[in-house]
Each structure stands twice: as C-alpha cells, then as structure tokens.
Image (tube, rainbow, N blue to C red; front, side):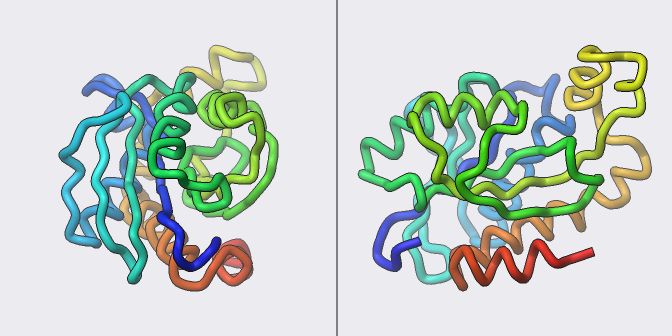
Length: 198
C-alpha cells in the first residue's frame, strides 16, 4: 500500500433487515465497527452504497458498504475506485469465509475468489485481483455432507448460533484490528501478525 494514496475499505453483505445478523453480512458488521472506533458515521449514499470518508491511522480512508446485494458487490466498489482514482492494492475487502473456522481471521492479497460470489463480482468488475482481503471465518456447515449447495446457502444466510453470538464481538474486533494493522503497518507486517494467530 502506497503511503499517500486514498484507501478504500469495503465490507461485503446484503442490504435489508432480513440479512442484518447473518453470517454473510459479517463484512458489514466489521466496517460498521471500524467506523464506530474511528468516530465516523456511515451515513452518506453514493454509487449504490452507504459510505463515509475520514481519517483512520493518519490515512484518508473511504469506508463502503455496497447495497447492490452480494453477487453484484463489484460494480459499486469499482465506481468508487474509478471516481477517486484508487488503485486495487489500496482496496481492502472484508468478507465472510466458510473455509476458515468461526472467528479465524486471515489477510490475503491477489488470490482467487474461492467460490465467494461477492469476491468473484469484484474480480470480474476490475478484471484483476490485487486487492487485499480480510477473510473472516464463519465455519463450514455440517449440512454440506448431505445438504449440498442448499447447506452452504442456508449456512451463510443463516443467523449466528448462540455459541457464535458469544464470540461475535471478539471476532469483529479482531477483523477491525486486522484492517487497522494493514493501514498502520502495511500488508506484509499485518499478514505476519494476524495470520499467525490461533
């Protein structure tokens, strides 16, 4: 991440109260929490998104929640990037990840979408994949063994279990910390610190 450039941090999710407390919306929850700890309010609308621009860790940052539904997340993020001339390596995407145990946080860069529709939409919209991603583990559904795709969809669109709910605040705080670490220390140091946890 270059020092002077504007950064964009986008949390992925689906709009509306039906989806508010679901695993698929953990990206929204993390960006809301990041705004709160940074004394920013996500109250502006543009490019099919709720957003706010402010300073975090001494850097100019735009926080974005695309309201276009998960599988069309790329369009709004690409519009912000084009408007503000933000390079892809200066974009951080926060999203749920079934391949990680619940609560595990992993920072990656330049990787494929791994079957995540929101990430796929972003890669399709930009035509490349150099963005940084904060993957937030939501665990894999046991139902997958016999439930197939419905098991996956039901899992990510399902609400947090009571056990997950107990861990949720810590998980969100860890993901916020990962974002702050990237802004503060750069991608390599942040990866070394965050990816080694647990």
